[in-house]
Image (cartoon, rainbow, N blue to C red; front, side, top):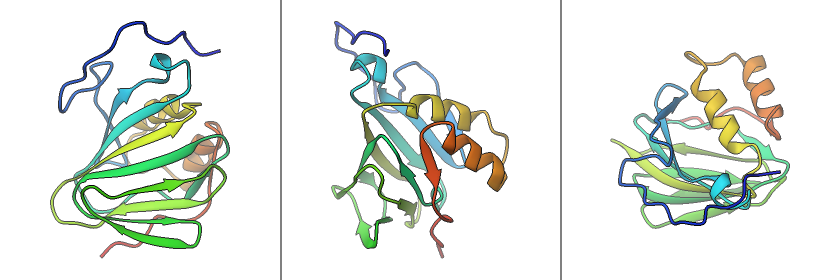
Length: 161
């Protein structure tokens, strides 16, 4: 059972994290928690994902979460199922649970997205675990991390020029 929702609002400043932590995954992605599952009785989890380099995660699917992406800065490409989308600031895309999806930062400079997961599930724990991985995880390590947090790796990351 998730923690009861917070009874007070929470202000998270620009560049800040709900728990004053900064997480780096895949070497170049920063993950800041903006709304914790503990704030919402497990109903919602929101992160700010900052990409300092081109690329993104492997194609994957969530067994229990919908995922919504909103581009704040930069250029991205996303595939949800068989559909491919080019995204810029202000664009968003939704990935239903159980649908393979993948995204990549393709622009120059830094990219930033807000990403929401509903319900929160194991996503906070997943990002904490990923932030403890040194360097690039092996395929087997990545599969294990995804699987133990309610997801499946369904293919490689998108190729980015």
